[in-house]
Length: 245
Length: 112
Image: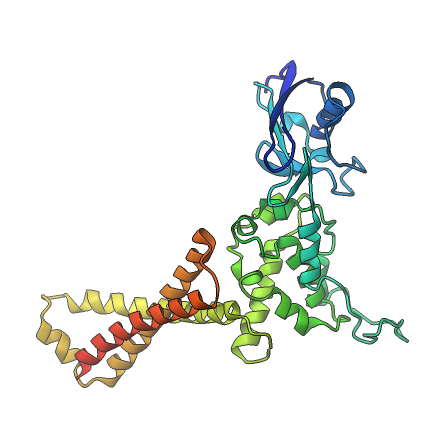
């Protein structure tokens, strides 16, 4: 691919009713999209609002919509997303309120983790006291392997911004919250299984998932929320059919 | 258990899908077999009149098809035009049962 001499960057400015503003940024080798945003703010327009912290793909706070697709900007090389014409379009994450410019408000995303009962509740001590003995959890057991598959989520909201069902139904819990719920449903030490399954059931929960798997496709951690949601559906199907809930 | 119509309708839709999977195969095989050597009303009635097995099959088929279709349309309406709520759910359920009712009436007509 031919390397453009400069990048023509369209950046979302303002709130929900904002507009794109064009910037010209020098193209460099080994340049990430976050480098481009930082260049704009440091050299061209200090009023630009955006969010980042670690710059190395650990915190997940720099997620934005890059050329129509939610990504971690710190882990996205410009040459992977830009053609020879050098055009780059940056928006805040989709499906979330816009605070300003490239910063989205993640409150609805984290509120839904709460609604999906994303908090561990120790079975042995529901009052929060430290249990008397260690719980023995065989690492190779099926439930533990299901839980392990989803616990590396860092809550960047890339899956949430990529989910069509969230776009159609603002109440829908979204992939990350249900992935979290599935890890806890499979945690044998957890004591809130029934309440959690109630919380993720129905039209605002796992039963609205179309399994189109954009969440799984775009998760920067290569997690599989789509399978987690399918797992919740499977458990709820048998529990409902056999009258166990 | 919390009242959540979405879960039960989802379970009904999955169970009816399983029934339809079998019923549609039986239906197609019956069509292909029946039209061999021409198709006549007499031949159809000879097969279905007084036959409880065919009556049961068509009643289950019609019920599954009516409910499955209505629940599917409910979900499409909720996602595309935002038609949601208890009233809408009851209306879709009525539409599904009404559709099934027409099918069941036809099945009884073939049996009687």
